Amino acid sequence: MSLSIRNQLPGTVISVTPGEVMATVKVRLGGGQEITAAVTLEAVEDLGLAAGSTVRALVKSTEVSLATGPVDGVSIRNQLPGTVTDVAVGGAMARVKVTVAGGELTSAITKDAATELGLTAGAQVVALIKSTEVSLSNA
Image (cartoon, rainbow, N blue to C red; front, side, top):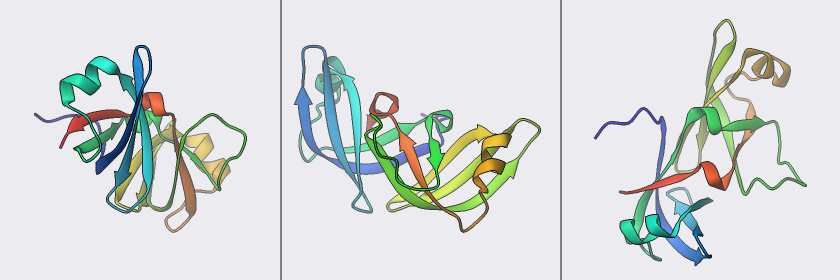
């Protein structure tokens, strides 16, 4: 199956914390960084997720925000440092490619945001992704 989701990072589940209806799943990416996904318990069961499971963390490019450094005081669990490798700017939006340990992320942000942040190839950034925006698939 092909997907339009640009961001597909391979990793290994390191923990599953179940709740009433949802669970948080921590995944260690290939480069050693961790990402947390909030998924339904039904998805955990359907995918057979447990410590050691091989998965892909999937994130739509519109759900990847960028900052010029780590951000304190926010509820966003996933903050992945990386380096901008490419910026393509259109009339209203920009596509920014960021290399992180273990892969590459694509972020779709406004042209104004890309300009205000001064994003160019080589810039250091932090990709911010809410755990509720991370989907998981079997690798």
